Length: 283
View (cartoon, rainbow, N blue to C red):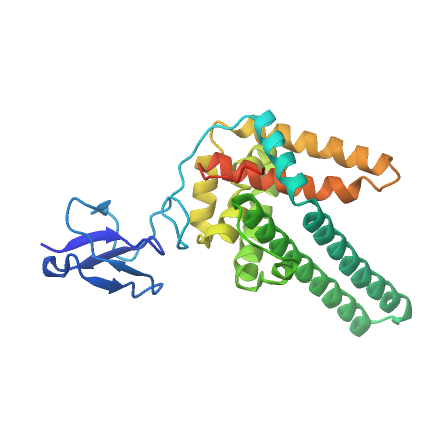
């Protein structure tokens, strides 16, 4: 009888013959190396799932623990996020400042082009294309920031250079972002509250794609499951973030330099906690 099991690298169902148990093997999908398990010594695959399908809660990168949905507490999220932020404040603030400078340069260049451009279809097309490119670069940098914060929260070595490592995730994030915007937009048309609920329910797709390379539809599905029971906490985190941004702006805008990276850290900490993953405890 063939042995069916989940690859420890990509989470896909693999099938081998009984005589291969205990042998070294390589996943044909992701290239992960492992020892073929003997029956009863490894999580068996669900027979109802086709070969090659990803199990949503399995890791898709070596070294990542399986996702186990968990309830979170707002005070704990904010406290742990603050401890992590303080331990890496220099890198986090420097990262945010660099992104602000890049965005300012792009916006300044666009304003100059807008003022010098003429009237007509061609100039207008150039403006819209430039605006689209600025948006894509902004998303690219957002992904890089998230990757850096994920590494910090896990206690992994990282650097400012990782800010420009978001390329492999860019297309999935853009595609998922369009679907997410359509869902939330439709919900907002239904008396606003459904839109807020949908935004909370499916919003963790962003972290799942960046963190685990989860396929888009699976990311929405897992987001729905890990946010179950945590919706009010996420909503509370949003409110705290808004209040902090207002306070940062009132502090002659200087406070934003601290507030923005802290809010980003809090979002990542909340994601890791509600998905049952470990977080570093800064000394």
